[in-house]
Image 1 (tube, rainbow, N blue to C red):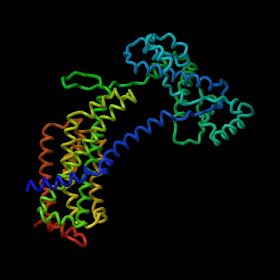
Image 2: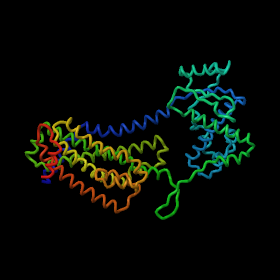
Image 3: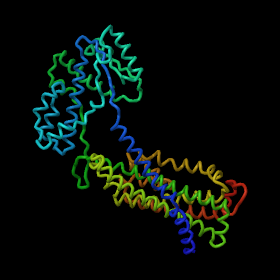
Image 4: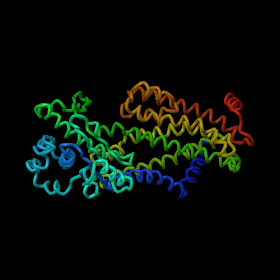
Amino acid sequence: MANKTFLVAQREYLENVRTKTFWLGILAFPAIFAVAIGIGWIMQKTKAQQDYAVLDTTATQLGATIEKSARNNDFIWSMRKLARDNGLPENHPMLRQLEQLDLQEGQAELAKAQIPPELRGKFEAVLESAAAKYRFVPLAELGADAGPAEAQEKRLSELVQSGRLFAYFVLKDDPVADAKGLSYVSNNLTDDGLRDWYSDAATKVVRKLRVAAANLDPATARHIQERLEFKAQQVSASGAIEDVKDEQKANKFAPVVFVYLLWIAVFTAAQMLLTNTVEEKSNRIIEVLLSSVSPGELMAGKIFGIGATGLTLILSWAVCGLLGVQLGTRLVPKIAEWNLTDIVGDPLYLASFVGYFLTGYLLFAAVLVAIGSVCNSLKEAQNLLQPVFLLLMVPLFAMVPVVQEPNGLMARVFTYIPLYTPFAMMNRASGPPPAWEYVATTALILFSLWFAFKAAGKIFRVGILMTGNPPKLKEILSWLKE
């Protein structure tokens, strides 16, 4: 029996991997994933510069001060970022000086910062400033610098309407006393980057003027307005308190990606099994195969053969993932800080992924091969598949909540529902669950597989040779009782 099952599995496996469409399908998913990330990154890098103007009718001409603040703020932010990206320690004198710079005097005071000679050229040549995304256009250049404010605003509105101007800001009355006379006019309702950028600078300027008007000491005002931030720390295995690094956070969220890939792999392999079963039944190939093997051998061979195909799929994705991470670290150096190569190639995650793929696939495969055996066409199978697909969608919706609380009540409930056990345990890998739960869930999933295969075998044995209308649920239940 084992020999015939192996021959059926070998036939199913080779029938799939020998086709060009199979390999095209394997490469399609990594390609789509890479394109989705690449297009977003390229579009951000090539985003067009947005032109804006400022209609300032305030008595103090506050717009010029806000503009200077916005540019200085970005300049200092860029210096700070470049310093950290080049490995300068947090206590470097230059960084401390940059942190303490007055935004209004940032350009002048920056010369005092102790920039290492070997980095000075890079600092002067490269400024990843958000201000480069936006260009201030004087009203004179737009022909809107003369006449009453209403006429100027009308002219600016026409330019926004024609697309020559991305947006304009209106500063009225005295924002220091009352900020209700501020507005932002743009026909782009989805991109708030310019609005947020300018608003941050305006807030800093007005806040400083209000402090001065209240005769408060600037140092006291800064102390009052200081934002409180709690440093993220954790307790290590030795009991010591240590800082949380970005790569550690990425490692904790890695199971979400693995669960998503696990879901796709299980869904793809199980769908492949269903399609194969229905097609061979409708083409009467099943009858020829059953003349040489028993229904149980045929069912097991099909499930194991498609399962091996699924493992090939996973291995190919793993290779593509490692190559993609290696390429990504060269194109975007920031990725290297996250140690994605270590996460993707983590033996614990990979072993768990393979183990839970096999158990998850085998469980759903038993259900789908039973469904396929009682259907005469793919149309009939699709109708019966809707409830199964609904059940299969649940792990996707639960991915993020479970990884946020891997040992919470919700995660534990999903863990002991056999259809979701592989997904839940993969998702909880960052917890990690206690050892006894691995033992308990392994016993649960093995028992569930035994029961599912036994039930699927009874349905497959009768349904695979049936023709005509698909059986009703009552008939299927009667087969299970036999």
